[in-house]
Length: 176
Image (cartoon, rainbow, N blue to C red; front, top):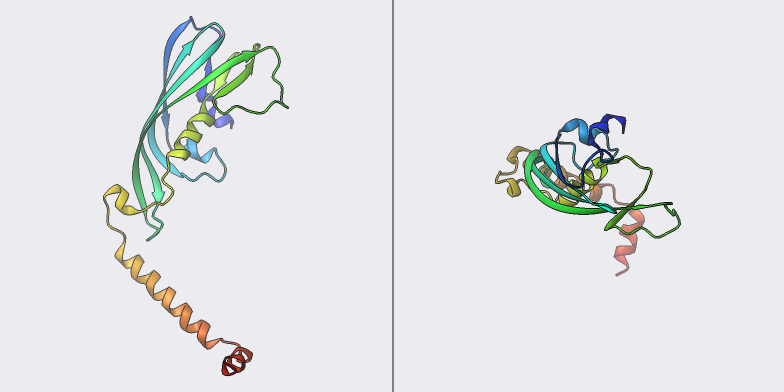
């Protein structure tokens, strides 16, 4: 994840109050995450860091397009997304690894000087990906040529399966 060091926000030298940070997200961002649902995109992430004495409040605004594969015709299409999320970061003398994690609050040791927001941004984008991806979501029509090819392949497999039928099953069917 060294490729994502630009997503680290040093907060120790910042004054109390709100500070904004802008990040550009592209293919190299998604390549840093193994087995990513999203392979490419053009997004802009704005992180508003509200530094307080005992905690940080991070506000995320991510907007742009991600490239997805259509579940019907397998072609690529651009899916626009826009999301707003919030994350609270608290400080503790010691971070207890055995303590159950609270997804709403991140606990950092007091000696920490920066926070890496790349994983948070990645998770927010991944959660925003629709469960079923279709070209119609982006206002496009599915690739007709690919649909025809898939139709031919799916009907051909049924005929082949019938031809390769086991003769023992045929004998059992006669018993009905």
